[in-house]
Amino acid sequence: MLLAGLCTVDVVQRVAELPAPGEKVQSLAVDVAAGGPATNAAVTAAALGAEATLLTVLGAHPLAALARADLDAHGVRVIDLAPDLPDPPPVSAVAVRERDGERTVVSRNAEGATFIGKAPLFEAGGADVVLVDGHHPELALAVAKAARAEGVPVVLDAGSWKPVLDDLLPLVDIAACSAHFTAPEPGLHQRGVPTVITTAGPAPVRWSTADGRSGEVPVPPVEARDTLGAGDVWHGALAVAVTRERTVPDRIRFANEVAAERVRHVGPRSWTTAIAGRNTT
Image (tube, rainbow, N blue to C red; front, side, top):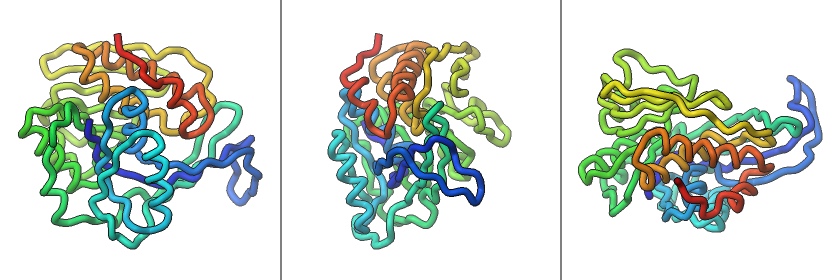
């Protein structure tokens, strides 16, 4: 499985209450881990027993070593398209509220990162499914084009509209969108996407296909203790389910169960042992 996109360094502070503007609070715990949509999806896929390769940009800054160490410890192979980049990787400052797992995130994402001339050299290399998050536009297009040429299904983590999606969507087999995702006309099916899925936190996950089928799959009720990266985990589980399940509802059901398990656990990686080796139906 190949996952292409953003890798950040996440500094996660667990707090009794999220601070108000100008307020200082003491954290209850702190974790440092790799983050980003494709990265968290890769960790999820590896925990579920898939061979997960993350194609991203990290660079040579000392902070990048923190992300590499975390990913190595969790079974993710990393291909860095800019290993000599001297700039620090994107850093996310995260606060998670103890009582309900709600979080705030401040991140610069991948703005300014570049690897011009390297992305077009990519080949799908035997992957059974590809996931892209669109944060590195050149990379997303190169990976999706290679996957399409080799008949490998492409899953898009569509958290927000990005200009690259005009060119990327016709190459996508499954667009998995957040409830806040909006696209300019025409709609995603009209842009060539066969399957569109929309998540909405604890609400049922809705899906539709270009041939007119549609439905929704309920989310398991759960007491959330930490929602950080839950959407990314859901996308990683969905990508795994694409290789194991035949129907859209069954794929969604599996992703819902894995994401529900993630939010039961405190910390950016503690949940991985709980889903290790979990099978689909």
